[in-house]
Length: 279
Image (cartoon, rainbow, N blue to C red; front, side):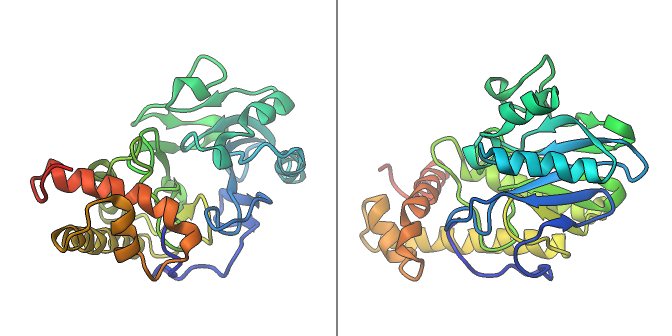
């Protein structure tokens, strides 16, 4: 994350642990930080009348948290049958193997290195565990392997780190690429327009009730930052760290290393499009 501003979209308070939609319940991981906000949102998703549930992003390797996830499902009369990952960053994925061990289930992810079992994930896949309909959406950019999950029945999308409940996300160069990220935001905007998505269930921060407003905010923010980076280069900044000091001066310095990743991605994008000279 690079900015702490609150997003539009009627965020539901601060940290959320509990039901967010008819099918999605959050268990907040105990890993708050400047980068993870209140902590990682581990989502338990299931049909209301089903005894099977899917976990999205088990979070860090923390036995107390993983057992809380299992207990939350069991109190609702459900058994965890599958684990999915939005991407491979440790604050989302490190606990996946342990949760799979505790529940004797598989882990599905886009990155083969993160999978347990024979099945991966690919854009266009539909998860049907326990009668669910949850569609896999390609949203690379934050990382190369980032996915989102569209839950049509709740008019919701689970976005991992692609859209957060508060602030904006890092384009984690070199794995993350700004062009991919902008395409992903446009893809999510299309879902809000064409498929009626209203709710963002993010990987960190509160739920957002205006998905289209959140996506538009992200697109406008990226355009503004990109223009600022281009101006900084035109005014003599020659390194990513110099650009960060100029463009992100109002951002907490503890976030500057993350901001530098995004700046490197922005500089690469500007060079690829011929808007600045080679570095």
